[in-house]
Amino acid sequence: MDVKRINEHVSVSPQISPDDVTVIKALGFGTIVNNRPDDESPDQPRSEEIAAAAEAAGLAYHHIPLGRDGVTPDMVERTKAALEGSNGPVFCFCRSGTRSTTLWALSRAGEAPASEIIEAAAHAGYDVSHLAGHLSQK
Image (cartoon, rainbow, N blue to C red):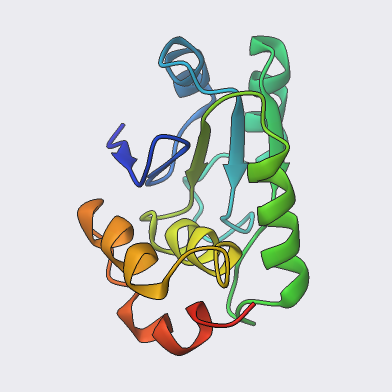
């Protein structure tokens, strides 16, 4: 796993497997957020497989898939609710971590300065500067 810390509460990663869930738990995460739609790739585990592993490990699990249709206000609100409702740090993943970082950034819009959000994402290796206009608004 290639875990990239955005801040003390949120980390992102490329695709995980159900076997990775025990490591995620051992790292101290309380919630897993899956931002990858099922069936993007034939070798990708389905959401319900990871959800079952998360439940067995005692972790909260949210599937908020971000696909070709793009970001919706509902996705941003669901992401914000998952982050704020977590009992501990949150582990988000998608194919590369970019969609997870995008949803995290948009969920922070209006809550922190755009420059701070962009800097945190960049520190983790993700460029969300193209979202600057959106990040300044609530």
